[in-house]
Image 1 (cartoon, helix red, strand yellow):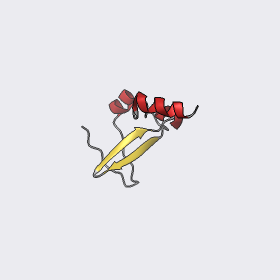
Image 2 (spheres, one colour):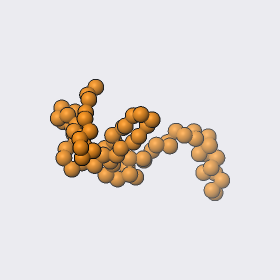
Image 3 (cartoon, one colour):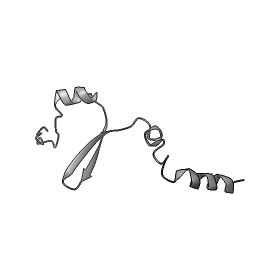
Length: 73
């Protein structure tokens, strides 16, 4: 765990070893997600469609999907 300090310009610096380990470089876009008293930084996906592809794959199960597909015919 690292400690960072908010600058007078409201900026933070991510330590070099962490940036290198995550492959983050100057100019990369990050998403800031507030969660209570926590802040999560996520790399912004280049294409959101690729980032969410398959997320609901197992959500309904094969029985439900089979019934839905049969109703289309």
